[in-house]
Image 1 (cartoon, rainbow, N blue to C red):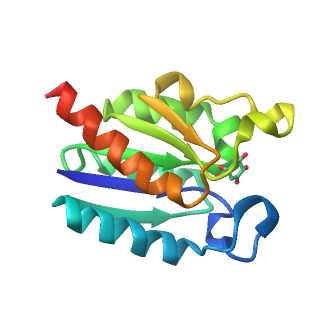
Image 2 (cartoon, protein in one colour):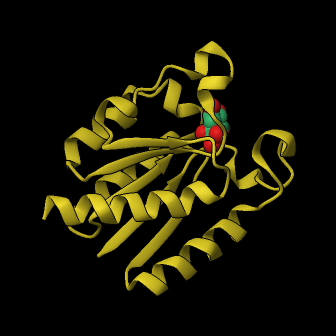
Length: 146
Ligand code: DQA
C-alpha cells in the first residue's frame, strides 16, 4: 500500500504560522510522524507540499497507478478550487480531506469545501495528530473496499 500526502498553500509555514490556530509542529515534524507511523504499519508514503494549485493538480494526476490513496490538506484551495475537486474525480483515487484546525468552528467561508464533495471523508480539528488519524482512516477504508 502506498499513500500520497498532499499539502497546499501556506502549510510550508507550519510551526511559525498562527501557532494559536495551527500549533507549533512544523510540516517536517509532521512528515517524520507520518513516516514513522507508515513504517510501523508496513505501508509506504510520499509527502509533498506546494503553494501552487497547478503543482497540486500535477501531483494528483501523476498519482494514478502509483498511489492507493491520497490524504489532502488543500489549505485555502479547499474552499475555492473546482479544479482540485475535478482532479480527484478524474483520477478516482480514494481521497481524505484533512485540516489541522476545526474549519467548522471558524469563519463561514471555511465551511464550504469543494474537496468534501468527492472525498471518502473529512478529518479536521486534531492538529498534527490528524495526519496519523487520516493515515489509519485511509488504511481502514482501503481494507473495507478490498
Ligand atoms: C487548513 C484550513 C484552511 O481553511 C486554511 O486556509 C489553511 C489550513 C487547516 O489545515 O486547518 O490553510 O487547511
